[in-house]
Image 1 (tube, helix red, strand yellow):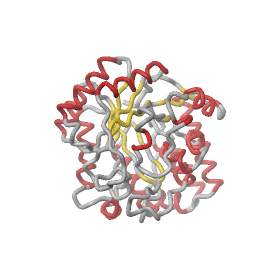
Image 2 (tube, one colour):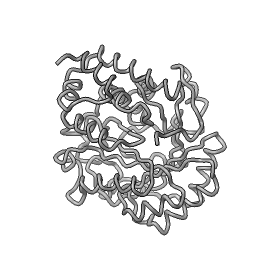
Image 3 (cartoon, one colour):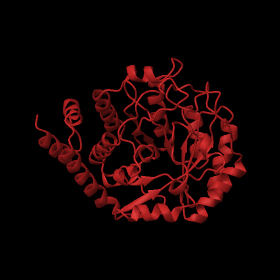
Length: 347
């Protein structure tokens, strides 16, 4: 195989065979990363110009019933301060964001049993009614098809559920037996049936992950054909069993962002907080490699530190949505502009 021929094939065909993806990942060089980034940036600009879409992130609960082994808010962690925002607090966070110009909100939480459909549906309805010109994205984990249908009817239109890894072996290494990869994947298809635009994604550099695993993640995304894909490097949390494992690398994450952009030119593709956590310029590098979404934090400042999925998460300064001028200047420094609209997803 020839690396440059494979890059050309990806650019032309928007996909590769599994062995070609593996070769592309195993033979990554600074030159190949640069070539992929150039092509990905070009394709993103053809559709979106030099626009980056900010999504106001509201992390409304850090309670979680699950014990994902890599996650700082896992149910068995006794060392974090738990919180739940009230409906009024969520609406106030949205109002704050709306006044700043945001027209897209992401309501994200742990899988908190307290927020049953009877509690969550009214919250979504309230946000939808109060801010009818805003897009509502939900990230609430695994629920039933009926639940997804109710949330969609309430005004939710987008849903983020990262599959994390499509490898059953690696999934089992990262999650307890009570959690099922098969069920998580079924939830993604249930979300589509319920009418949601869907987003998925995976960790890069998870403990025990191989490049073959990453190739399979790319093939799964090709099959699922979501509207959004969020990937970020694994970053350890000190209260988990993986505390001593190294973080994933910004370089491989950015390489994969470029590959994903070339696989689907219309994707909404975030340059994530985790990427900005391990590299001070990580989000800018992600945008220059084909990403076009950022998700600043709109949560009340007194709880941001408690939504600690991993260590050293950035949550102040330009990550604080109030400092929109700082974020705008950073985006403008690389020749892009923030676009405060709902952002168009591929149908």
